[in-house]
Image (cartoon, rainbow, N blue to C red):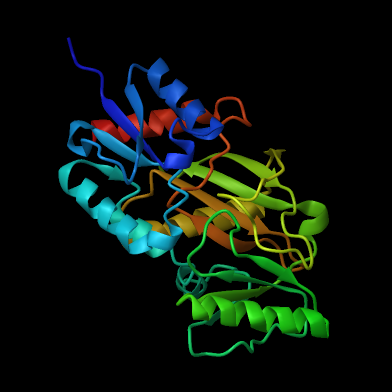
Amino acid sequence: MTAAPVVLLATCAEVADLDADSRALADALRARGADVRPAVWDAEVDWAAADLVVVRSTWDYVPRREEYLAWAARVAAVTRLENPPDLLRWSTDKAYLEDLRAAGLPVVPSAVLAPGDGGDHPFLGVEHVVKPTVSAGSKDTLRLGADAEGARRSADHVLALHAEGRTALVQPYLAAVDDDGETAVVCADGEVVHAVRKGPLLERGGGRVEGLFAEENISARTAAEAELEVARAALDVVRGRTGRAPLYARVDLLPSEDGPVLLELELAEPSLFLDVTPGAADAVAAAVLRRVAG
C-alpha cells in the first residue's frame, strides 16, 4: 500500500490552525488522500518528513525577511518547497515591479525611494499611495491626497520608513478602483484557476493598518480577456526566470484608461480566495499533488 503524501502548509503563529483559504486547500488535498498538516514556519518542525512544503499564510515575515528567506533555503535543502526560495526572495521586495516593467508588462507607475533619497517624489501633486517595498497585508500603506497636507504626510511617511531602514514605493492612486475594485487573477501551475474582485481597501487620509493584515471585501469575478493576457504575461516572466510556472500565483490588477495595469504579482504568501469560487480549491489541490509526483 502506498503511503499518503505528506504536505505541510507553512503558516505563522497567529493563524497556526490556518485561515479559511488554506483550510479549503487542506480539505481538498485530504479528499485526494494526502496527509496535510499546518506548520508554523519559525517553529521547530521536521520539514524533512514532508514530501512537499507549500508556503501559505506566513504573513508575519516582513520584519524578519532575511530570517524568513534563510528558513526557506533550509527547507528547500531537505525537501521540496513551493514556491521555491529564489521566487520568495524576488517577489517579497516590490522592486520586482521594475523587472516586470522592463519585460514590457503594463505596471502601475512607481517611484522607489531608498534610505537617503529624501521624501520628495514625482507623485506629490496627485493622489497617491506610499508603502514599503517589503510589506504584506497593506501594512504601513497610506493613501494620500494631492493637497499640501497630503504632500506633508507623504514625505513624513517616506522618511519614517527610511528611519526604520526600509525602502519606500510610491504610486499614483488610480481612482477607478473605487468603483470597479481590483481584479485578482489566481493561477496554479501556470493555469488560471479563478478571479475575484477585491473592493477598495485604502481610505484617503487613513492611518496605518493595525493587526496582521487589512480586512478585504472579496467577491467572485470573471476576469476580462485583457486582464487574463496581463496575468499570463506575468507568468511568462516567472517561467523565464525559473524555467517553470510557479505552483501558485496571484496577479493583482487595477483598471485604468489604458486598460488593466499590474499592481502586484504575489508569489510568496498570497491569499488565493479558494473558499470564494466552487472548484478553485480542487484545482489548486490537483496542482499541489502534481508537484509531489514530480
